[in-house]
Length: 329
Image 1 (cartoon, rainbow, N blue to C red):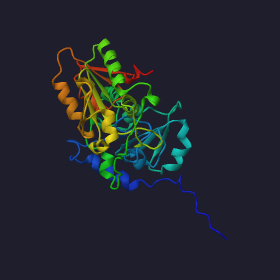
Image 2: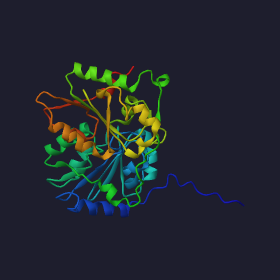
Image 3: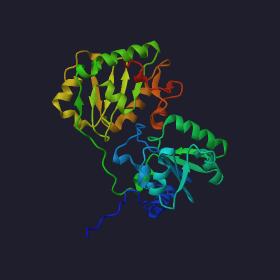
Image 4: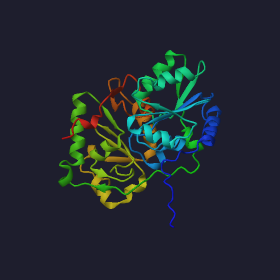
């Protein structure tokens, strides 16, 4: 008789040792000057994508739950995960008894803020990676914690990465260029239209962080995230300059270089300057250091807290909608 292997796809992940290592790291002054009393693990990546690459599946790694939406929070004594009704059954099957499932949308389920306030000791510090926490989330969480005597702090080194020994590398797939037959507009026309909209709103710089808007703007497609034709990159568009942040090894393809006119731009203002993917923060800081009194930098409030906080408050314009949506046909 042929034996049948049991289906283990919904078996709970054993997380006791991982949580012990994470809590140990939270207490270490190596990652933050003072101990962290709670650590927030969102679902997304540095671009606030819902669907993410394996290297960014940090919430899945620490909890076992691999649905597309959910937030984990780990304190010294507790571990809890919030997700919506699509995933109640799945989460309950994939998490072990170290975790408490918080069913969002139910009357009895506390918000993340209320739960933290109820379990934390006085004057606690709640840590989060500012690259994977959106600016609007930071604002709401920080306000609630401060009102209860706590503080939300940016921990620059991701604490999950610290305990994730075999974390996959960030993918860097080959990019595909799209012709006018597919796009209707060249990337040069899109940039020109975007600048017109920026000028109407007296905006000097536009920071693009969402992967789909960057793919749309430059008429490029990738395969860095399964089932999503996107690639890891940032873009900062000024009135006379375009800065593109991407793995430089991808730019060796002659077809891509021709598409972006990297070697022979038709106009100086449409010349693309390329930078490493990791240098977006330092370049944005340099741009902001040279801003004039009336210069404005436009960025979506769903962008990472790390990038939005690099922009001086008197120069930043945070929008609930992404600026690249404006000129889309």
